[in-house]
Figure 1 (cartoon, rainbow, N blue to C red):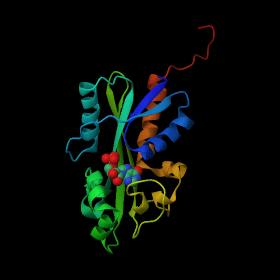
Figure 2: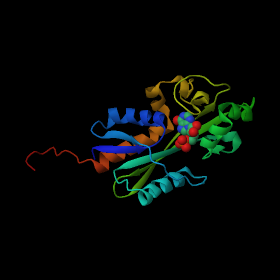
Figure 3: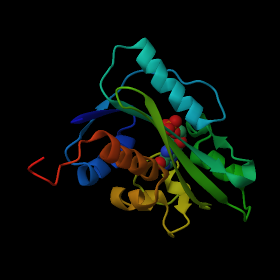
Figure 4: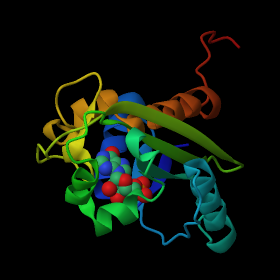
Amino acid sequence: MDELFFITSNRNKFLEINNMFRTSLKHVKLKRADIKKIEIQSKNLEEIVRYAAEWILENTDFRKPFFIEDAGLFIDILNGFPGPYSHYVYETIGIDGVLRLLGDIEKRDAKFLSVIAFWDGHKVVTFIGEVTGKIARCPRGSHGFGFDPIFIPNESDKTFAEMDLNEKNLYSHRSKAAKKMIDYISKILLPTKSTNSTC
Ligand code: IMP
């Protein structure tokens, strides 16, 4: 495999994963494709991305190795809301609306989940990444996208939006899912070099 397509309309997501490919999987060129895909309603992110990947295979003639990714913010005190509805919630009430929902509450634990569905040319394989943290009391930072200004991973005092791309990748849900995919590609799909030149 010398090229792999990340099907996404989100340039930030592409830059985050591309950064990992440039250091960990140099000989596979990551490219971006923006193909309209279907998204089913489900509480389960894995079900949503798997369905979307299979839908692409059944309804388009795209046949190059590709992956798609779906993520969500799950807030403990809200029983996991907005979770799979994060995109809609971001577009409607946004960061301010989420902060208003939490008000002054002390218990601000939350997690981000990312699920990648990767089509290796034969089958769809999924990889999950998770980061736990807290919702900040007010937005901080100007990097990134979405809920980055209000999410503080447990291993840091900064919000994701106060981190550059490399620092966010040290902790993020997406980098953890992408790392699993990169390991899978390195081990399973790329031919290993023989150490014995006579064989
Ligand atoms: P999507 O469906 O994967 O695009 O993610 C749903 C929503 O979750 C997005 O619209 C963002 O608002 C939010 N989101 C997903 N990933 C991230 C992230 O890494 N940082 C901040 N917000 C994110």
